[in-house]
Amino acid sequence: MSHLVLRSVATLVLAATPLFAAVPAQAVPQQQLPCQVGIQKIDGDLTSTVTLTVVCDVDKTVGARITIGETVLLDLQQTVRADVEERLTLTIPRVPRVCATLQADGETMTVCAP
Image 1 (spheres, rainbow, N blue to C red):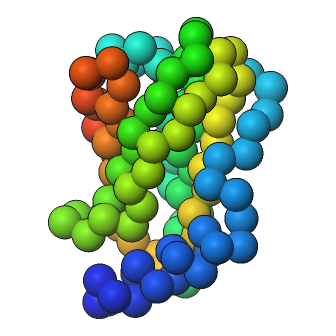
Image 2 (cartoon, rainbow, N blue to C red):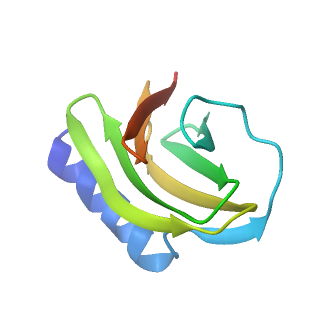
């Protein structure tokens, strides 16, 4: 599948939905980053739905990059409010693996979903 097709589909999905939708805080796996981060991928017959979740104890500006191999689907910075779960969901053509790299306070962490 071409990188252009993946990027185009992700762009279409992002244009139709907010980048992060604020919802009440819920449990997310603990990480080394100053925020808690989780990623989930659910595969359908033709598409994968990827959800990135971020929760911070204090207001924090977080950089997020979602990739499939070397292809960058999304690269953004978002201010995450304290104790509010921020969630980003993308629907893309089905892929075997997707990763998210987060950066906050000089710390970087990558999480992947097979």
